[in-house]
Length: 156
Length: 286
Image (cartoon, rainbow over all chains, first blue to last red; front, side, top):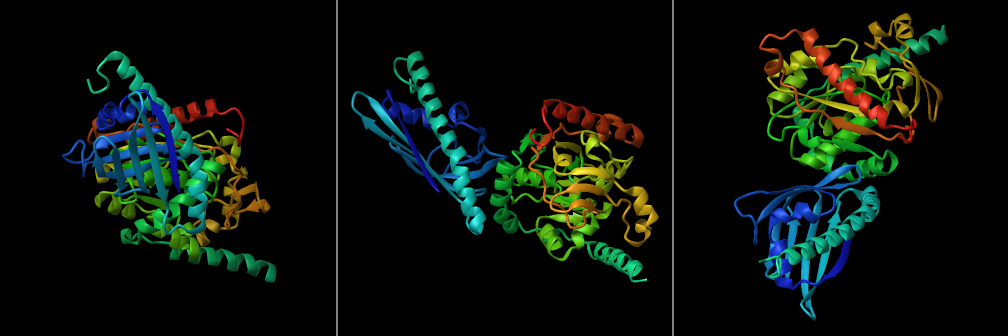
């Protein structure tokens, strides 16, 4: 199951990037996120690993994820190492007047679980999509708050 | 003559199944099998039972612990499945985790195999100690069949029946106790009686090591005696609350009074259960 949501913010891509590359910010805007911890020596960048947990329905799902793409200031992508098989991506693209389109993609699967797995993928897409939309709303709010505090933008 | 022979043969068969269920191999646990079943468990727990597991992060992530739960739902122990799902998704299926179950559950040909692959061991002090020594958290239900078959109107009571073996287990293994309190399981059917007198009258304690012969009203059987084949559970909302770890030696000293520890643990659990009960407005709905 792949879910794709987006939002447009009045912040340039570089500033959005600086906000997203800091692992400490994720607990501030990711809906349902109960745990986000750096696992290993690298706090960010290609190969950085995090242990994450998201409350989805009756369980916290997640596990260890690894950054597999780190293309400043356009794309951050990750794959799961343990836990639910998933891959995700932040895709930042500039819009006129210093704005950014932020796309949040998340794909997950339950290989080997047969028909129950497929039904669960479908059923889980409802709360997951809701959480992704809330995440983007909260991210937009955070970026605007940081911009308001600092005229130089979130990076400043 | 035939009327007497059939129940006798049935109880003998139960006794054989119970003997067959005595298994304690840690190697039977299969993480891939558990992973494969998580989606179905998640679906049932989320959609059918609207389950919630709170404060799982209180379980230490880096050491073995003895998880002590209250047991509900007759032989269809939904709260165990809900907790096991939450544990496996929170810590990952890679972290060893074992539960103890009655030999009867372990002895059924199909269910026993599934339980073994899920990490379940037949209930014994030795099996639990072996799992804890290997570094795995172990989930036990001291109340066992006595508690899980209590009448539905005792649903909000901790009834361990004075069983204190779990305290000795925690002391022997040198691990903290983490109480796990759940509510809702006793609303999956209308449990009428443990049938402990009936079990004694039929000498089940001797022929099949069963101290109870529970009687309930449950789907699809209607009047359900024994619950040996389980039942179709009503969609009761299940809530599970994990309490802070209790280090028995730190709190009660190196040679603690077991009665005092028992009172403390069950009081903590009862207070938490009272809190969960106060949140519920309706039976089943939650």
